[in-house]
Image (tube, rainbow, N blue to C red; front, side, top):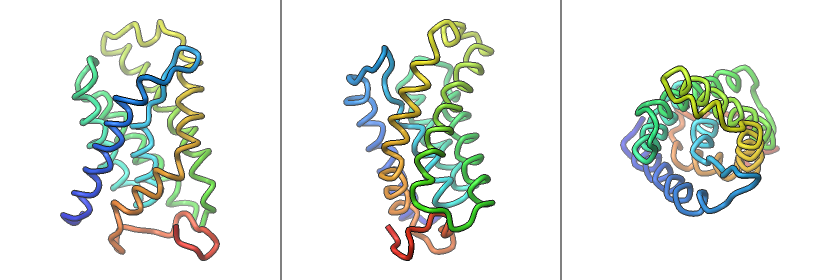
Length: 176
């Protein structure tokens, strides 16, 4: 990763964290709020593959962990898994249309929320399982699916290096 890509990725992570910690916490649907931070590993995996997806997922999760009163490193672990798995899946599907990012973001975000709750409970945070996970999973999946194309564009800007980018998502000859 070049220095410019690292700076741009850091700016995107900070932007998403600011939006998440200000606007995102004020929005409540069925008692749950959006978790936009899970979009970054998904978008990075889609744009730059499994290694960069895991790297961005770890960094974004670590930054989110600084703001959360949960076990430190839990978001970083989940972000790494999410970014790697998204990139791994997309490496097997060349030339997917742009809208594929939406269902992948929904599925990945839902899986991240559930995995976060299960691993958190294993680490002694039983309240993660006690809360109703269904509304949280639905809200996070739907909101992240809606914002997935924006996140993919941001990560395409943040990771523009030709050796890192793959044509995983095609737009019919029109590159974002």
